[in-house]
Length: 233
Ligand code: CA
Image (tube, rainbow, N blue to C red; front, side, top):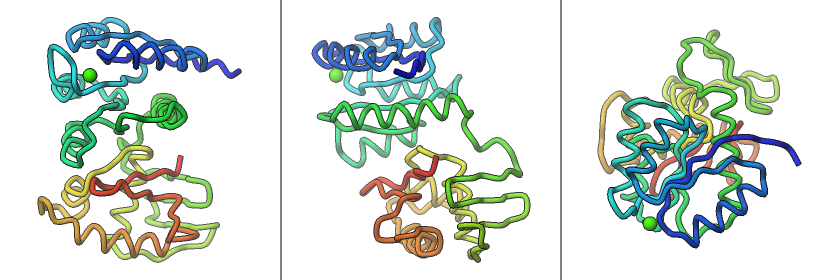
């Protein structure tokens, strides 16, 4: 089996869940540190330099969202939230605070492992977004931000300025769920809380242009009620 060696910090107070997850993750050669309180978790984050944080929101001593806030004050480390709070507002709050992804309990181990692999790629390739001009390649799709070109299967696709800005935003955050409000602010330049209509309309036309099968999108996935995730890594 491939040796990942990736260091995971698991902050979760439910012993059954931590035992099960630790067993499964170690079987996949992850290094796992378990903390069952928020304070322990923050201390371990500061002293052990993990690669990825897996965080439960309902902790005995503090709210997980506060941990996201504190970590984001000092680090871009990928944070995967694993929580029983499945409401859209809960997801949006955690994502807007800077969590990269959100898994609702109960979850399958297969799903969790897939999400962790996306987080790992962010660690090993570095989170995109810093550079002004770059060529982003995702399988059959190429986004060349230096020449303002989008190619699908080597052929140029013509996008409107808004579609282009939307695609670049998504492509610079692969694997991360972007909320409607965040997309609105970044692409349109203003906020329109609770109204995702413009985003939905633009997303639909972008999908028709870049997706091989717009009904079953492979690049831009919908996170229902929350936003979108660019899946093309
Ligand atoms: Ca809990």
